[in-house]
Length: 217
Image (cartoon, rainbow, N blue to C red; front, side, top):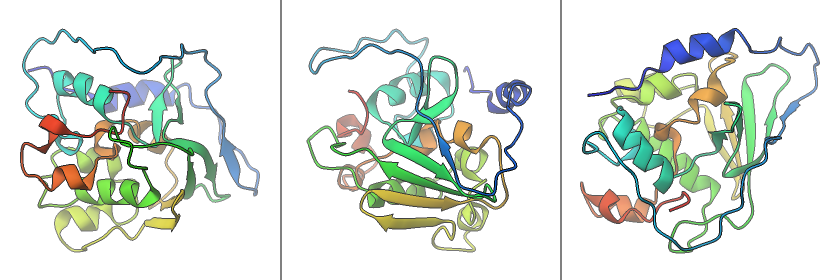
């Protein structure tokens, strides 16, 4: 089975990361400058896969086939643009603190799950808390999310919640890292950070068959 190979890609990316700013003021992450087509509602998604996806639960995705489908059903705070740069997705804006440890995400207005239910900051919090919960079986969450303060403690069972995650208001999330990380936003583009509907998850193990996703389909 083909497996996602995260860190070799990240090591290549590190060679093109710009030098860190020496400014003491918060830094805003710009939106993508690439031009992408505007797609209307409706239509069908047809994918050709090499094998059956083992899971369509974003928290458990560790293979290419699953990732291809999941990226069409769910979205996260950020995504990769055509230039392979992390840019806002469900987030409208991102501000980074002067010490580069706290990222404040402002959600876009009007975003919703497939059934029209608004997506709030607490949905983002709940999704990432779930992805790092030992009860979920966090196969890949530590790899992608361990920059966040409290993730290692949560995954090990030493903590019941993430100390580095704060819901500021319905549209705003503040995430504090253990230490500055140039790769944090790139890691956040991967499925374990995608937003899921807690009402759908409550249906049981096969909840993703009717996922009520946060993504384009």
